[in-house]
Structures are given as structure tokens and as C-alpha cells.
Length: 160
Image (cartoon, rainbow, N blue to C red):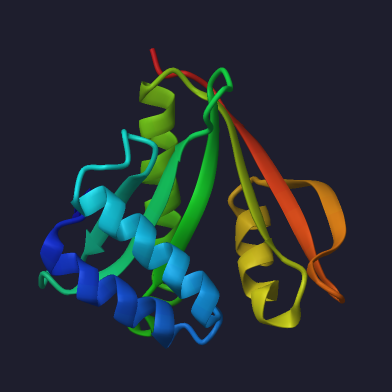
């Protein structure tokens, strides 16, 4: 089941972000701020954030995306994280499919995401490519020396 996040999901999301071993403290702080904005309804609809629960009602992951301000039908795919127990079981793919269907329902458009070029993000880059996202640019040494920003994009058609 995929549904909007609730206050009860906050601790699970934070646990999950730490569990991945990929996100640094600064990234976790930003993700926490976004979750808090969504929960306090102060985000103006910019962050659409959803949790994934399995059939036994266990929290297995979350996704966050939203429209890019001052653009026409352009979206940022901000965050996705899946519990280690759910790796390889299609949870991340289901979350991405859910996001893409929501974007199609909202009129479609282009979805952008960016990620690090460092080795811990290699699995994420492979996953994005498998989901049909393609690399549109690389900003060398963006985050820090030796850590480039890789941007991916995918076109989502509007649903009829």
C-alpha cells in the first residue's frame, strides 16, 4: 500500500535514511526538514511524499517528488529510500511507478533527478537507468572535489 506520509512515518523515514548507509548527515537533515514541512502542511504542495507498506503493514520505503517552481510541467524526483529487507523485491520500482502515474494524472511532463557520482550511489544510478531515466548532464565537482552531480530525466505522458 502506498499512501501519503503521516506523523507516525517520520521516525521510520529517518531510520530508513540512516539504515541505507548512503546519505550523509547533511542530506538526512534536509530530508528531515522536507518531511517536517509536509507533515506541518507548510510545503505549499511542492513536496508530494508517500510511504510504502507491505501486506503485513510494515513500513518498507518512501518517495518524495514535486513540481519545480517557475516551470511548466517539470518535476523534481527528490528522494527515494527502501528498507534493506525489501531490496530486490520491487518496492523501489513500485514507488517510482506510483510517482510517474501521479505525474501523468497531473498532466505529465519531465521528471528530473540528480545524484552523486561517488561509488555509494552506483546502485541508485543503475536503478534509475533501469526505470527509463537517462543521463542529461554531469556537473563536475559539484558537491565537492571528486563528487560530481549527475542529472537524469524522463518524459512522462499525461494520462487520458
